[in-house]
Each structure stands twice: as structure tokens, then as C-alpha cells.
Length: 359
Image 1 (spheres, rainbow, N blue to C red):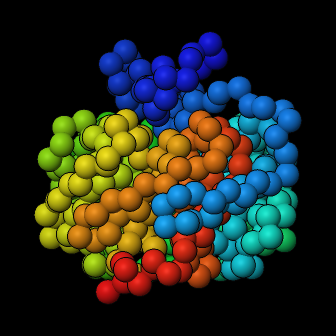
Image 2: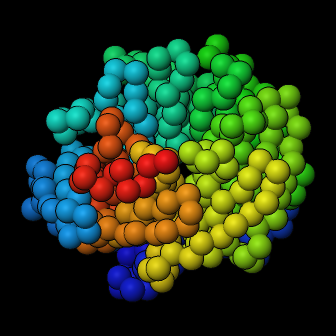
Image 3: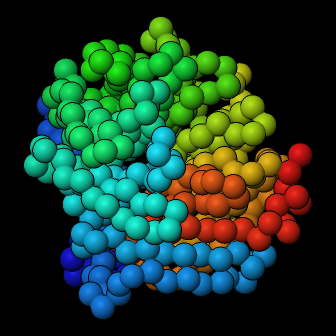
């Protein structure tokens, strides 16, 4: 992406999956040919260091940002660990990072070179589990890493989440499957009926099933713990669904990276969509917040949507930060990763306004 101006770069959004139109059978494509969605990297100011704090206008939220020691690490997603710290993946840095609530960052190398860690989840065993190009990784809170091979080569494993059955469930972006791995490392794979669906985000639903986005097929998928898959169409064409989470209203909420909308789907499959005010916001991941709110990542903003569809957006201090992962932290805090800003951020909403959105 070098040489592209800011407007061109961010209009591209997620890296274009050129092989969808240029190459033949999807099963024959390697991980290098089929890239999971990432943010493009602009030049980074080498003089930025430490952390910065800003107060933004809307509801006087405050944002704190912490620099990641490894430059151009491309952090992707993060999760709250059993040790009370936040753990994140470094796609380009080939590391797993850990940040305390005070902003102290530690990084751990992944044994496999160029593993491209993407999604991360807290496991039922107290460890953190993460996806690689063709492996699932496990890291203890002490930093010990174990890796498990995925049977299907070049799967480009992406999203991962702890399931209701005590296993971890993950999406295989390149090979059109949903994977399941036990804490002992046994992997099972399930085919998705729609070819070239490009599954990405995944979350446990309130119905005991796992729900996932099909970035390439314009669908939301549901898989039971027994492996039965059901798919639901999204009304907006080419919406490119990406992140997904269970909402406080018993429905599933998802981002439409290409459609510039936030979607809601009931467990019966009924879909509602809400427009994001900012054009070409390139929404990424989404998380449930306090009360009846959900929060989602945009290129340069954090968005908030209530379960009745009201949307608010908040600017982030660092320009071109390209936010990807976002989760609810302790209390009312939101923690997020800045993929091109190479930072970890924390948003603290003003508690005075939280009751406005609680049930």
C-alpha cells in the first residue's frame, strides 16, 4: 500500500481480495493469495512515544492511548484475560501483546515465523487462544506459547471465541470452514454450505449456538455445537459483514464493512439494518457495552449504537488510527486497538450519561 494517499488508502478499506475474480478454485489458493481483511499501513511518526490523553466533546468521554513497543506491529484484536490484563494480537509483529490497566505493555514472540496472528479469545482453561495462518495458538498468562496445527492447510484462521461446550470455535477464512478445538488441542472442522463465503467474525449466541459472519457471501451463519449450519441473507448487497457479537437484547449485532451499516439479526433470522452517519466509516469489530448499548470500531472513530438504533460517534486523537478490535473492559471502559496507529486505546465514557442507555 506504499505510495497511496490517505484518501485513496482508506477508501480501499479492507485489503481487496483480488483472487475472488482472478484465480480459479478457492481450494487451490494459498494463504499468501487470500488475505484476511486488514487495515493498510500509512507512514508512522517515529517521534510518537509513551501515551497520550485526550478529552473529546461528545458527552466528555476521555481517550487514553498507549504505544506498542514493536513498530508497525499491526494489532488486530484484543480480549480481557483471566489475569485482569488485556491481551492482543500483532499481525505484522508476529507477537502476542499484553497491556495492564495502567498501560504497561509486554510482548511475547510466537515460535512460528510470519504466523500472522489475528483473532484472540480467553479460554475456559485460563489461557489465551489465538488464530494463525494455519495454526491455533495458546499462550498462558506467564507467556508460554503452544501451537496446534489445523488439519486443512492454509486455512487463514481468523475469528476465535470460547464456545458453550468448553471448546474454542474459529473461522477458516480461506478454506470455507468453521473449526473447533478442545483445550487438549483436538481439532474438528465443519464445511460451510455456501462456497467462498470467507467466514470472519464469530460469537456465541444466546441460543447455545455459534454465530458468524460470511464476508464474501453476504450472509450471517449459525452453527450448532453438533456442527449443523444455517445461513441467513443480509438485505444490503455486498455489505461485507465483519464483526459480530451477542447484544443485550437477545439478538446478534454485526458490522457491515462495505454497506456502512450496523446489522441486527434475531435468533430466528430476521435482519434489521441501521445506517452509520459517517460515510465510508469501514466499521470493523463490535462489542456489547453497558446497559442497552453496543460499541463498534471505525477507521478513525468509535461508534455507539443503542438497541433501538440510535448511533453516536466519537473521534480518536491519533489521525488515521484505523481501529479494528474493540471490547468492553472493566466497569464502563472500552478498550480498542489502533491497527495503523500502532497503539492500544481506552475510552472512558462519562458515567453521568450511562443511565441514559440502560434498560
